[in-house]
Image 1 (cartoon, rainbow, N blue to C red):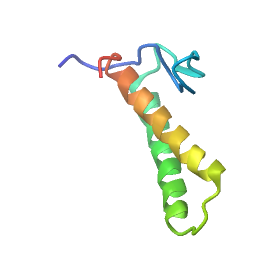
Image 2 (image 1 turned 60 degrees about the horizontal axis):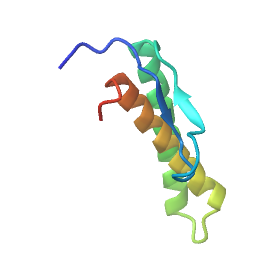
Image 3 (image 1 turned 60 degrees about the vertical axis):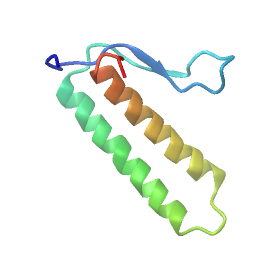
Image 4 (image 1 turned 180 degrees about the vertical axis):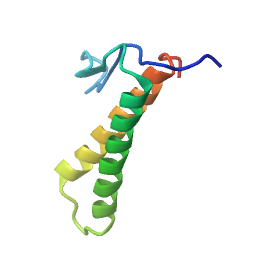
Length: 85
Protein backbone atom coordinates (compact mmCIF):
# COMPACT_ATOMS: atom_id res chain seq x y z
CA UNK A 1 0.00 0.00 0.00
CA UNK A 2 1.30 3.44 -0.86
CA UNK A 3 1.76 6.28 1.60
CA UNK A 4 -1.34 8.44 1.77
CA UNK A 5 -0.59 12.14 2.11
CA UNK A 6 -3.45 13.92 0.33
CA UNK A 7 -6.72 13.47 -1.52
CA UNK A 8 -7.34 12.92 -5.20
CA UNK A 9 -10.30 14.49 -7.02
CA UNK A 10 -13.42 12.39 -6.61
CA UNK A 11 -16.98 13.36 -7.55
CA UNK A 12 -19.85 12.08 -5.38
CA UNK A 13 -23.48 12.75 -4.60
CA UNK A 14 -25.37 11.30 -7.54
CA UNK A 15 -29.10 11.89 -7.50
CA UNK A 16 -29.67 9.19 -10.11
CA UNK A 17 -27.78 7.63 -13.03
CA UNK A 18 -28.86 10.38 -15.44
CA UNK A 19 -27.25 13.27 -13.57
CA UNK A 20 -23.73 14.48 -12.90
CA UNK A 21 -22.52 14.37 -9.31
CA UNK A 22 -23.47 17.32 -7.12
CA UNK A 23 -20.23 17.41 -5.14
CA UNK A 24 -16.55 16.58 -5.38
CA UNK A 25 -13.68 16.03 -3.00
CA UNK A 26 -10.94 18.38 -4.19
CA UNK A 27 -7.46 17.06 -4.89
CA UNK A 28 -4.53 18.02 -2.71
CA UNK A 29 -6.26 18.18 0.69
CA UNK A 30 -3.79 17.09 3.36
CA UNK A 31 -4.31 13.82 5.19
CA UNK A 32 -4.71 15.63 8.53
CA UNK A 33 -7.33 18.06 7.18
CA UNK A 34 -9.22 15.27 5.44
CA UNK A 35 -9.27 13.11 8.56
CA UNK A 36 -10.43 16.05 10.68
CA UNK A 37 -13.34 16.68 8.31
CA UNK A 38 -14.05 12.95 8.10
CA UNK A 39 -14.36 12.83 11.87
CA UNK A 40 -16.83 15.73 11.75
CA UNK A 41 -18.92 14.07 9.00
CA UNK A 42 -19.11 10.82 10.96
CA UNK A 43 -20.01 12.65 14.18
CA UNK A 44 -22.90 14.36 12.36
CA UNK A 45 -24.05 11.11 10.76
CA UNK A 46 -23.96 9.40 14.15
CA UNK A 47 -25.99 12.17 15.79
CA UNK A 48 -28.59 12.08 13.01
CA UNK A 49 -28.86 8.29 13.06
CA UNK A 50 -29.15 8.28 16.87
CA UNK A 51 -31.97 10.82 16.67
CA UNK A 52 -33.73 8.74 14.00
CA UNK A 53 -33.67 5.68 16.26
CA UNK A 54 -35.78 7.48 18.88
CA UNK A 55 -38.28 8.99 16.43
CA UNK A 56 -41.47 7.08 15.56
CA UNK A 57 -42.07 9.17 12.40
CA UNK A 58 -38.66 10.47 11.31
CA UNK A 59 -38.35 13.70 9.38
CA UNK A 60 -37.22 12.97 5.80
CA UNK A 61 -34.76 15.85 6.06
CA UNK A 62 -33.04 14.13 8.95
CA UNK A 63 -32.88 10.89 6.97
CA UNK A 64 -31.34 12.68 3.98
CA UNK A 65 -28.93 14.51 6.27
CA UNK A 66 -27.68 11.17 7.55
CA UNK A 67 -27.31 9.79 4.03
CA UNK A 68 -25.49 12.94 2.88
CA UNK A 69 -22.99 12.81 5.76
CA UNK A 70 -22.26 9.13 5.17
CA UNK A 71 -21.92 9.71 1.41
CA UNK A 72 -19.47 12.55 2.02
CA UNK A 73 -17.46 10.53 4.53
CA UNK A 74 -17.17 7.60 2.12
CA UNK A 75 -16.12 9.90 -0.73
CA UNK A 76 -13.45 11.48 1.45
CA UNK A 77 -12.02 8.08 2.41
CA UNK A 78 -12.12 6.94 -1.24
CA UNK A 79 -10.35 10.16 -2.31
CA UNK A 80 -7.64 9.54 0.28
CA UNK A 81 -7.22 6.03 -1.12
CA UNK A 82 -6.85 7.43 -4.64
CA UNK A 83 -10.39 6.69 -5.78
CA UNK A 84 -9.53 3.01 -6.15
CA UNK A 85 -12.22 1.70 -3.79
